[in-house]
Every structure is written in C-alpha cells, then in structure tokens.
Length: 112
Image (cartoon, rainbow, N blue to C red; front, top):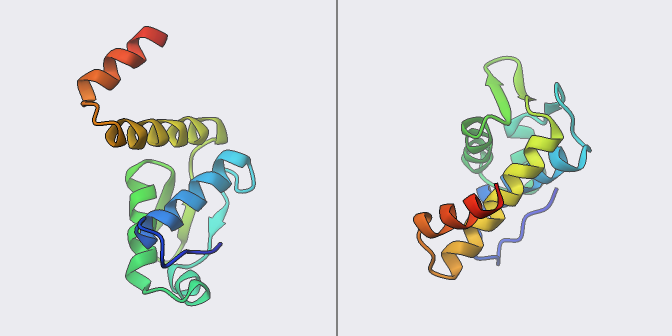
C-alpha cells in the first residue's frame, strides 16, 4: 500500500480506497485481518489517526469490523465491495459534473 502526499485526495481516503480495491479484487477476503492501525501508519509514514479514520470509514460502510484487541476484519464479499467502489466512482463523477443526488437517482432508476 502506498499514499501520494501530493494528491488532492486526503490520505485517509487513499488508504480506504486501496483497501476497497483489495477487497473488490479478491486480494483480501472475508475474515482477513487488516494490519494493525499503528503498524500500517508506521509503514506508510502517516499519522495513526489517518489510518484509524480510513478504517472507521470502511467500518461505517460495512466492509470491516473493528474490535479492540482483535483488530480489523473484512466482513463483506468482494462482489458487494466492487459495487460499492463503482457507486463511489459514480458519486464522485456526478459531483464533478454538478449533478444533484436527485439527478443521479433518476439516472440509476433507468437502469434498475
């Protein structure tokens, strides 16, 4: 895993995106334990809270479970993770184009 400090994307989002990608590709499967936050922070040379924020974001998305003393464990199947990654890319592109959430939902409903 690597982070680009000159990227406009915040470091925690870069970390979370890489974990999502690893889950989506099958490189990291359900039940897999992610590196301890402190260990990952040291290896990436970032603040511990940056990694914790990335892990918290993944937890809030339902991708991982964070348990004190047991670490961070992947919960979600890769197919669902890939769909989440696609939805995130769609939302980012929609914001870039100035679309509202109503516009995006209308667009999605055409394909569902």
